[in-house]
Image (cartoon, rainbow, N blue to C red; front, top):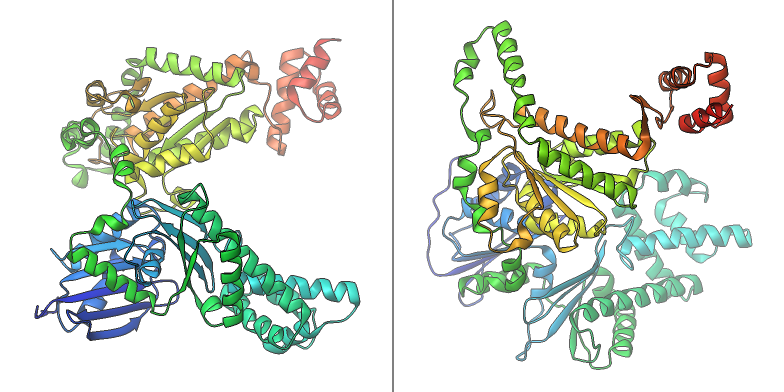
Length: 617
């Protein structure tokens, strides 16, 4: 797309507030006069690629009358610091050198309420289609309660009120044999003729349709319906509870003043509900100030643009002490260490890969893979030490964790997933953690691997402890997510390992002045340059699979999951595996297939139990 030339006249401040329904844009002049105001399509950061995000922001830029002097962007889905960095990075391509604060839509909603002369803890109490409570202290600390979607969160949102109304109406029908006023009003709102039609509709109903039922609940409550009034009273209580819980995270003593900022259609469009929420907030927190937001959230984005122009963007960043604590150490972050990695070098044998005959290409790849065994054998002592620690962990009730991003993360998840059926081990004994979570198993998640704090939180959320072993997997050795996981595991006194294919990382780790970043063991085979430069799913990926196979197979063998070279704890979950189980018992005991199968049936197809039973005879 051809870039539009925009004039830069008097100072102008651009606010962008984006969510799952729409994107609101407001450009104001120095005196507060509106220069441009419009809405465009929805934008949720977590659902967009960098290219899609760039197109979205480019479309906004092309509709502006002039280039802004500063920008404030609040976008749904910008949860982590790496998310915000990604949003800022893409915005800087559209508006180079323009000061910008890039954050989430909660920050813009909170900023829409004017700050008093004396800074205080402020908690946004938001209830619209969804709900969330978000707090910020003057020192930059933040807290959040709720906002996890209509299935597992969003208490007291329009969607939650609609869902709870549907359940209450059906319970009322079951208990009394007829629908009350609320049930009749819901049927009317949905144009249904009988309650049973709600069943098939509810299975596929979109979130917005369910949320629309909140309007019906408020309408019937206004007419005096007892059930509707009870549902709204409960919703107000839940919202106040969540808001106070959020405030308590920032003010543990529960006595200092706090300002609760009310926002969202459920609160602002229903005065009686707003009064009840305010009453309960003041009852729970007597010194509290309750302020309903008058302005649109995009006004908050403009306020952030003013902060950006004044150079106070840190107001919406991670507190400095947290950012400093989790900044990747220079010895690891140094791009020279990455450049020195064999995984980044060009392989002289494959420089003509694009013109090479297929047969020659196959021979080349096989010959390169043939070098892996020797490269891994050089690291045998380190691998042996790790296996011994994993055996110790399994014998003491500990667990093995893999943490990685991209191919490395997927290989960890793969190895972990194969342990329960192969060794009848509990799923939690070996766990794979991949940057970006479940979605990253089959598609890339933008910025996930660069999130140091994300790696730490992943280990924290799994409650890693002293009995556990954590293996961080990173082909180049530099992946920030992996280092965050290793550091958090080390802080929790777990045994930590870095598996990478960059020998230079050992020297880099020795230069670390903060030993909390240094893994207990490093496995760094030099597998040489990849056939396809930088494509670590090739030799590095194959070597990773080989090493993980060694670790789990030999550890499981040492804890009694193998007799001779037979899987005596295999889970015979299908016809093929049941046949294998019969053959295992027959080979170990010398019994006939029929006798072996009978013993397995008697033992509930637990191979080891059947073996021990026959061995006693």
